[in-house]
Image (cartoon, rainbow, N blue to C red; front, top):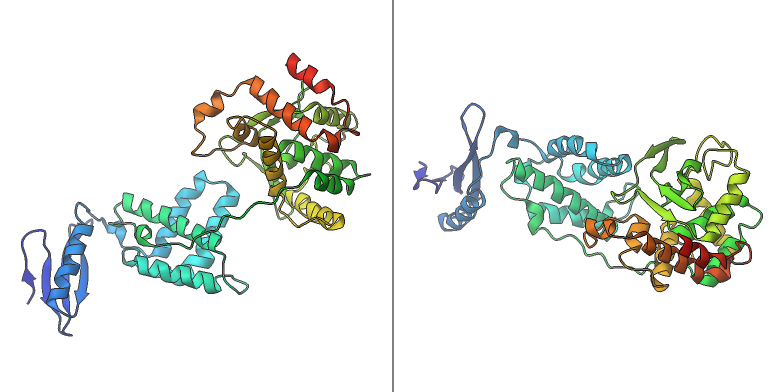
Length: 392
């Protein structure tokens, strides 16, 4: 027979199989019936400690009927709400992560039954054999799985579907910070030498190295985004799906920005505009009614690196090359994030809004001067940069 304890201390009983069970009321269904949570132990002494932990865990919690869902069901509900505020590419990444890495392991388990031990087991399994094509996932990828679950469980706690977030006591694998590759001056020369005779790719990679735009941002530039005073207005990004371009907002809140181009790139743009036959600054090579696909830029970079005998790198590393070059040249640390369209916790909104036009001019002037040796012969007159900067 169950032994009733003082109010709020739960109920203890010995089951027919000999185990001891402690049970508390954690909430109520819509019809008023109680929602129970239980713990089990082989002895009453062991049960007592487990029951104390359970009571502390659910203290002040009032679960509702919506707590009776599996992890898979909750992630489906959660993502349908969440994806309204996500970029489509991010939403698709979340869907893929849930479908391939979480649901096969824990999808049928009740949301309230997921423990840190289950999560540690999931991480270990993904590290060993998480790839759909075989092999294990990287530490960084498994850590992203952890962060997705952390956010989903946190929302479940806020909705009173859970008492505690189990990810708080789960330890994801550590990610070692790798040094990002940066092109040196002579390497930039080798890379651009491979584009000689190809106006599209020469202008494209020159602009990228002098602005640090994201791949989707530079591919989405239209002539309406370029003004006669040499300003480039970054206001959209592009990605491709099934071969068709899909335009969207820049990656971050700070992504919409205006960049004052160095005189060298302004000259390049002015010359390019004279013979433009498309609304896109960098159009698709086979259909100038469409923008250059970001995937084409990626594959072209890989090809150029191979032909130039340079180390392999990501397209994003060109952006890192720009930021490193700018920082080394003395660009103000308050200015650089705004040029790159970054939104980070370490850079508050008032930092962006307090950035002056003079700071922008100084930033692009010093970057331009730093790599004059690389572009000077073909992108003259560099001597006019200081004069133009003062006029602005």
